[in-house]
Amino acid sequence: MKEFEVRFPKNDLLVTGAIYLAFAVLCVLMFVFGRHFKFNVVFFVILTVMFVMTVLSNCLFHLRVSDDVFKVRTKFGKSYGFDLKDIKEIECSDHNRPKLGPLYEITIYTDCNELELNHSMEGFYTLAEYLLVKYENGELGNNSVSKESHELMVKIMQMKK
Image (tube, rainbow, N blue to C red):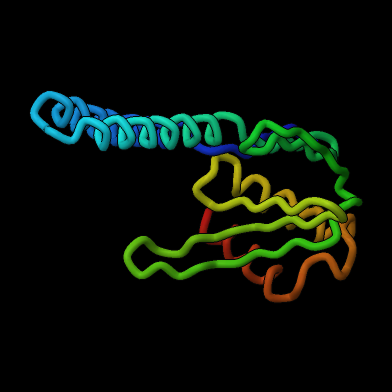
């Protein structure tokens, strides 16, 4: 089996950086032309903390699948792993967003962890196909994927093609 990863796309960081830069410029202008110095400092500190947390969470999170072994590094940098046979349940869902279209999510449950992935992540469709093939080949438990989740995963794979 080939090895693949699921992670947040790096171009999201460009958008986050552009938004942060705009607010940072606004803070500097408020420093120069404003009278509320303490408010400006607090606003800038909060904005900086939020930016750093967003960048770190996007850079740190990834899921690597190799030989039926899942290795996860969370948004906070904690690492853990599990085997394909450790998966207790896979839930596939879609959230209808009228203006942005559907948001597809796959949630993988093990005994002690829950891993939620969405279709905007790089490698999401590869993971969906991998899980679908493993389920249809009987390598996952019969009760691990509900009928609705299975149908939605098939639908996701058809839409991808």
